Amino acid sequence: MSSFLSYVLKLSIVVYLQTTVIEGLLCHCDICGADKNNTCETDGFCFTSVSLEKGVRQRAYRCLDKNIIYPPENPLICHHANPLNDTFVIGCCKDYDYCNRNLTPTLHVKTKVAPAWSTSQLGTWELVCLIAGPIVLICVVMVVGLSMCQQQRRRTRIPHSPFPCQEADAPDQPILGGVSLRDMIEMTTSGSGSGLPLLVQRSIARQIQLVETIGKGRFGEVWRGRWRGENVAVKIFSSREERSWFREAEIYQTVMLRHDNILGFIAADNKDNGTWTQLWLITDYHENGSLFDFLNRSTVDVPGMIKMALSISTGLAHLHMEIIGTQGKPAIAHRDLKSKNILVKTNGTCAIGDLGLAVRHVVATDTVDIPLNNRVGTKRYMAPEVLDESMNMNHFDAFKRADVYAFGLILWEIARRCNVGGIYDEYQLPFYDLVPSDPTIDEMRRVVCVDMQRPSIPNRWSACQALFGISKVMKECWYQNAAARLTALRIKKTVTALGAAQDIKM
Image (cartoon, rainbow, N blue to C red):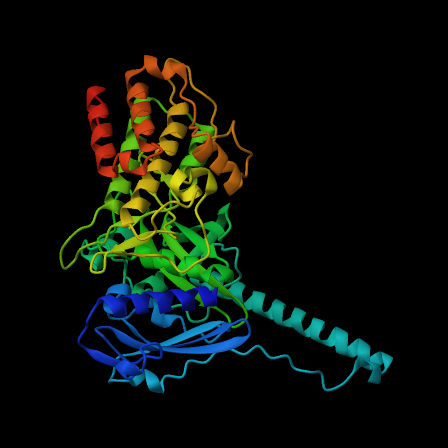
């Protein structure tokens, strides 16, 4: 994983140095060659990184340009030098020219302490004491600790939490005042949608009480938590998914991203007690759960189907749209759109979540900002060009078209559960009748690319104007030719017109 991160950093910097001339900070550069005096120029930061690749330590000196880092003034990637990292560390600076020559980021070294003595040298009673002593001591410490926590809980009237007590460095008095999360977000972001200040995020995270587990995935667990009487969702990543956590937090804090149909981001924080690290991502909580869960247990009527389709297409159009200006937003493609990554609100509309695989369009260089993690999308929802590897990864529109293909499959899932005159189909995943429950890439490639099959359209849909209109949209979303597919904005306009024809108030 560290070698992948190192490779992507090297590649992006080499490409940028070859295509752009920047006047600014001079940095020592180990790949620039003698003709450039081992020097690169940047408008961002100089950096030095150390990575462990196949047991060999490699040190790199490069430039980190402003247009490939976020946020520009204090890039998140420069915080990757966690003292416990043993495969990759990075240090950044911009104090003076060639400042990265003096940076010395150090990999954490795992050491094994050899025992000074052998148990074979100990007598029976010494061995018994050696084993039983620490156990008794741990029990005493746990009893005393639990007693102190219970007393503290009684004094402060903290509601029950599955963890015995709060972290020691959590603020004793809230720094946020008696305001709701929505009020706080509106006050601190001023409508920019770029996220709360880091200090406020950390303060919120340290005051959350975890209540119950509501989901599990390859990344870790999702909990329902409470913050001052408000429900929040806490996505807890395992330590091996640090890059997924980092990327998702980074994308959620993109300027102008906040939208009614994008899952509301609240805070990100890492909790490290020296032996293990918990990576928290805190978002709005929606009691209906994911669209997958909702459709499994409930049907929808025609207005409900139109409302869901319109809200998802509106959220996707906002993601795909570039907003120009000083407080602008880059175009973003999701890359893992599916019913399990869409949340259903109490008013029947939806919000798109799980942005850990998202990519951004870098307008200045017309490149795609690929995330630094090893995750891939969900095979069942992969577009034909992704399955047969014919997709142009350097062309941002290709990622948007793959999203639209996945959206067409989600429309099919919703339409099957649309109750018209008491008739509806049981919930099924796309291609349920063509591939196993956990299909391989080869199995999906055979069905989608070779046989060119798509989910079947029931005959009854043609008898209902709304279902017939939705089926037309989904067919235009999953064309084999990616360039022929609808755009998210066109889908939004088409579904809006469909709702107006049905006299549905959106």
